[in-house]
Length: 401
Ligand SMILES: Nc1ccc2nc(N)nc(O)c2c1
Ligand SMILES: [Zn+2]
Image 1 (cartoon, rainbow, N blue to C red):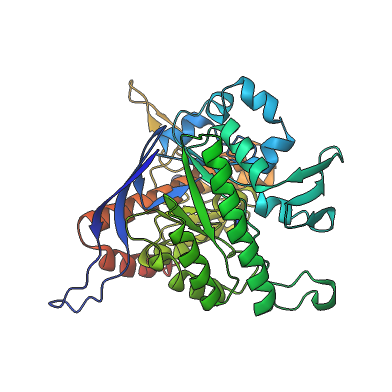
Image 2: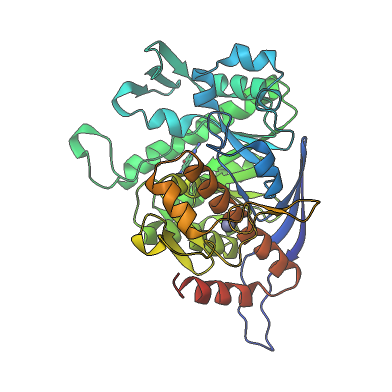
């Protein structure tokens, strides 16, 4: 089940000369709860958002998280998931979950996989077993996972050709077309199997087409004709230059149905999220907040900082003075005492000592930064000030920390 209600848009304003944007504020109602959009979805590939307790995710306002069909199929396996009634019971998360179909992950296996019309043959990276992933298998596994949003099995068209004769060259229009058209056939097979399984959740189609707008147009028109309850734009954030990703982000999302949720897969930096909202995107996921946290790169309102830098060694201030997360502000207990609220000096020390708490606190901060950014965007859309918010965001981020 899925319903999507549009609450606010971002119209032009002749009086102020504001051009408006495709941004919109919505409410997504799913089987495990309601999600306020635009939204950022923390990535929990193996049934965990790396290093972050579910209670912390709830405290920072995470409304929906991601899981991955391929990884959970490899480990712990479909039978274990079945015994828990799905992923919610297994990882003890009672809000919505979106699962990616496995296409992108299997594609990433490189030489260890063979893509055919029927599906993808590959060797398990866990134990070497010969396995086969097809649209039907992906739907069967996602039905066992019982995720609120299921992604079709697609082929994530690479930015650089993987064909032996043209390896390393930019994927040609013909290669991108061949790949996109197969993803459309797999979209139909995913939809048919999803219906046959009587899955009660929502299946999204994924727009492909490489870096070619006319192929993107063909893909999205064909998918819209198949009447999915929501749509994703895939095939970006695959190593292409930033301006190429921005060009596709400017083409496809706002051409998808206004009354259905639009999800841009695997994107991106804080700047990408603000720009993506302006282009009509409702849902984002990216490993950047957690992955950068693990390598000591922290996002703040006034720019990014590397906690390993010696200049933080004696800094008594928080990562970000405007942040209200456990690492920056801490929590006030009923007796008035404060838990958390650490200095940059302490976080620098943890990083230098390679302490476990370092990536944990950095992940809490970075995820809180992303989720708070989306909350501020939602508030600006509610008050009709998204244009001003965008300008202030850019100015703040340029200040430097
Ligand atoms: N950048 C990404 C990330 C995840 C993806 N997942 C699927 N199924 N397809 C794509 O094209 C993706 C691209
Ligand atoms: Zn913080």
